[in-house]
Picture 1 (cartoon, rainbow, N blue to C red):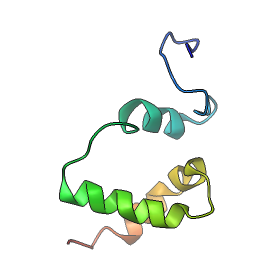
Picture 2: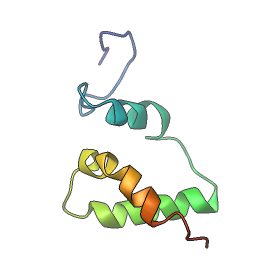
Picture 3: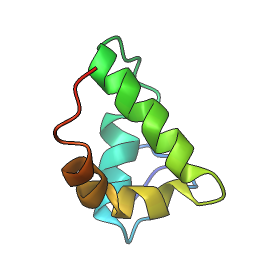
Length: 72
């Protein structure tokens, strides 16, 4: 669907949440090949169990701080 800014976005993207819009525009559906990015996506999927993606995105800063020292 076309939004007021002229961009085409899915109807599930919340127009009132800037993080969600950025996620939709810059990450959703984009293939990832970097090991660290894939690990991040796996961890976020685990945290999402039972929660909405929007809820997880809103907590991303906290998650990044907690996992900043981890290197796989």
